[in-house]
Structure formats: structure tokens, C-alpha cells
Length: 306
Image (cartoon, rainbow, N blue to C red):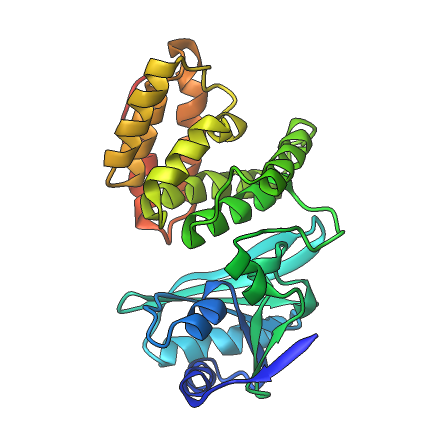
């Protein structure tokens, strides 16, 4: 396991997080650690923070400290599960465009399903841990699964597509096509009848729409989404397209400026008898009340007839 000390500029960031949360031990994970190591002046809009232990008094105390630091709490206590039965409690907060997600869980070593998303900073050690060679894998633009624990396939698909979108990683690579095939097989066997599976599915929809909008190489990402029929994996009601329709969809998605635009483009290629099913799925985005684009997209389809 590689552990390396952090430069002063990153130590300052960790000290600021300590000032905001009051937590004496935490990790920073997600996209920020890699981004800030590779780029001295990255634009940081979202911070993912994880704290060991799920104790209501500790969560309440942290939430109050975040509020005192001037943040608006957009989600005070969201219960979620990773690896099917590992509980996580999340706090979401915002201040002037800066979003912080604070997660409380029993095992911090379970952060990340794919190699590239497993690197994290530690406080108060002021170092980073790169157990699965995330930095080297990013240079090679190769993603691999690093966990043997069973996971909701929609969570895996969401994370995989996000990494490809953000870091301009080709979906079409042989090793990546194998990952997608495995995920697709698991989705075909998956039961969406419980609350947390439904949540994971809704997050997958939200993430797909966002990844199309923000992809580093938007042209390639959308082209590969269509070629590999990934939209059909998430929306089975999406009908098979001929070459002309694929080109039309590609052009329409490239021009999209919001999640609502994308959903409006996709629904055109769903048979009218199945559109209500698609609309109901998009409407579930309303549960993500902290994401205004999701709320607007859901409301559009609440006000749209089949």
C-alpha cells in the first residue's frame, strides 16, 4: 500500500475541512484527491468526506458545525447502503457553489469499487493512500474492478460511466467492454423491488444525464454510449435504432444543454406505448431534491402527458 505525504497546499485544504466539520479524523475521497494531485490549481466544487463510525450524536454534532461554518444543509440525514448491506449515513451541504458530502460508515477501507476511485487523503496523517495504483491506472486510461464484495450493478454502472466521462477513458477498450458485459448480465438478474435498489437506479439515471453533459470528450463518450447500447441497459424500453436514427440521436445529444434536454431527446426513440414507463423513471429524480437539474427534469415530465 502506497502512502505518501501531501504538499502544503493540500494540507491547507484538509485543515479547512477540519475547521468546517470539527472532525479530528477523516478521509477525502472521490475525484478531488486525484484531481488535486495531478493539477496544482483544480476547480473544486464537490468534496467527498468520510468519517468512521455511525453514531447519531456524532452525526448531529458534525451537522451543527457545518451549519455554523455558513453552509446550508441540503440533506441532513440520508441513509444508504453500499455492497448491499454496508450502511452509510450522508449529510449534504452547500455554500456559494461548494458542495460537501459527509458520509459516516463503519469501514473506510471499502471506499471505491474501481481502481481509479480508490485513492484518498487522510487527516490528521496528511498523507494519501493509493492501494490499487489509481494514479498509474489513470495514466494508462484503464479501469478495473478491485472489490470482490457483491454490489448493486446500477451503482457499478454509474461509477464506471462517470470515470470514463470525467477522465476521457474509452468505453470501447476490450477490458472495459468485459466490465460492461458483466454489469449488464447482473442487471438482467437484478431485483428493483426494494427502496435502496430503486435509489441506486435513480442515481444511475441522474449520473448518466450528467455524464453526457460534462464528458471531457463529449463526442467520443456519446458515440460510444450509442455504439455499445448503454442507454438500453439503463432504459430497456429504448428501442433498437437504425443507422440514420443513431446519427440523429448523436447530433441531438451533442447539442443538449441540460438533463431535461437529454431526456427529451431520448424519449423520442421510445415507442409511444412505453413512454409512460420512461417518464415515471425520470420523475423519480425528484427525490434528489438537493440537485436542481434533477428536480427540474422530473417536474418537466410530471407536467408532460404521454
